[in-house]
Length: 321
Ligand SMILES: [Zn+2]
Image (cartoon, rainbow, N blue to C red; front, side, top):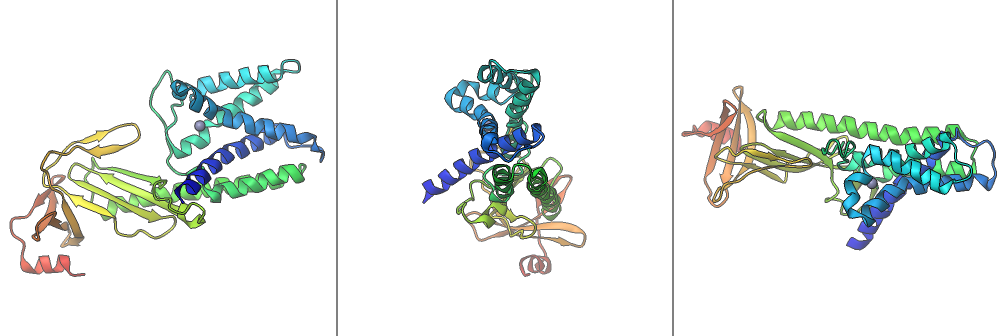
């Protein structure tokens, strides 16, 4: 049921923006002093502002960069505030709306690249730490929203659940840094290697199953190696799905959001069977794609060399566990 999954991911993404907008409107108003229903319009208004930048993105695709830059966000927020509150517009209100509009970029940048400084600077900034539909992040926010609706004076409850969502974000970031460190050590990478750890949208097979959102996808591109695999938040780090080594060095091509290793025609990859430390040196035993021969590589001067002769004992040591 791919469409159910896609719908869920899309709806929870929009919902996350909306709920954050409501919470921000509530906090900028310093909570609500009364329990009446009259607070509702402000929560709805906050949610609307928070999802507006994506309307600009979808309906005016040429404005993708504009709609997601700080400068234009603040400007558009201010214009929106003036249009929707012609008579009772105040400076304070305009600033609040501009902040909520601009704050849309923050959760976006947790998930994908955002051109914050467009048009002065084209580069996109991305923290790649959270998919916005993540229920572990969204659930505490929804409780905050429920509190604002049903117990509007309980500002502390709203803050506590907002904090929980932020703590979850912190845990993810720390885990990501630990994983980067672990990958660097495990594969004995050369300094030019590019390591990426991202929340794995493409592996989200069952988004309604909350534990799936704990999966990271990691990829390593270096001049001689390509490694791709999955890891689990706070723990499981299974062997990579792809672990390949090449005989020749080829330069890395880096873009804003991804890196790859340029390949030469006819170049065959060697599938890594095992890599181990042996007498202080790192060795890789790898099998050629279409042969049964096992090659052994060892590094020197940041390059992996295929060894001419491998003593029987060492090969045995490498390929037996
Ligand atoms: Zn957006």
